[in-house]
Image (cartoon, rainbow, N blue to C red):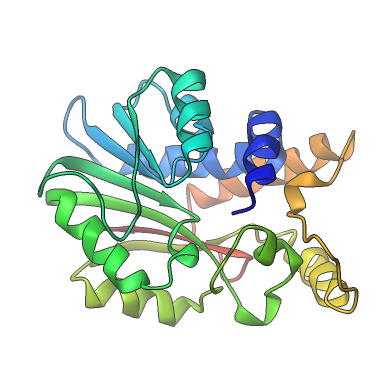
Length: 240
């Protein structure tokens, strides 16, 4: 993604409602995955380290990102080992990890099947893949261009992709459900305005609205402990 987005991420990801809310949902999913004690976990596309920081204590984390700036920031912010690499050529041996987090990663990769197969390769037998991806190709917008997304997925398309790499989904749910109508409207009308320099939603200054949106995400997180959401902006999948 644009280099400026890494600086934005490092500044806002510890408090921004979307980052905090999504990581809370991933935490619940990771705890439900019944991993062995002291699991070794790869944060694929670790960005500036916010996920590893938020999930500290749940395992021994290793970060991987293709950006030198992201790896520098992630190492500084978390103290975890972080390496430079790409999702379609992961620089680790077969069967290294008990779990792999791919949070908004596969949509960046032109050959996403190669990336999913690499995730399968570096996971131990029975290891857990927890992935989030943006949904609905018709919502592709300036936000996606700023983050260098190649695509947004359909639910069936992403599950087919996982199946081609021999993953079997154990849980599939949409997330970011309650904000779906508002965001869909903003993204749709936003396409009518061309920008010279596209910017992600993370650059929006939310002020007090951040607290309100955080509360909405926390409510959704509680619901997700008991049910799957029928629609939303993103898809969350636990697969083995």
